[in-house]
Image (cartoon, rainbow, N blue to C red):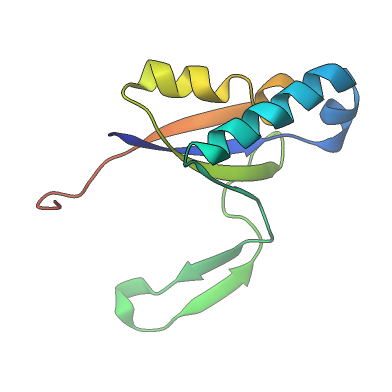
Length: 113
């Protein structure tokens, strides 16, 4: 089954201004996704890693990506199609609480089984 990486963006302000009943339903939806096998997690503090031409590993604290909202969490989900993956994440907290969820197809490298 095709896999998708999802990145949820959202902040406390948007979450707090969303009706509690909507938030509760979104969290219940996340529980259903997790029970069906989705790997989900809250975003921690990132570290950038560089090793240009495999000569020297360099790290820098903080995100490389810039976004209007902070990254809130990640998930790996399975769905037959992109449309079904979109439907799955459309009811998650970031999607309903004034945030956004990106859905990225996880494509296998050439020669991968």
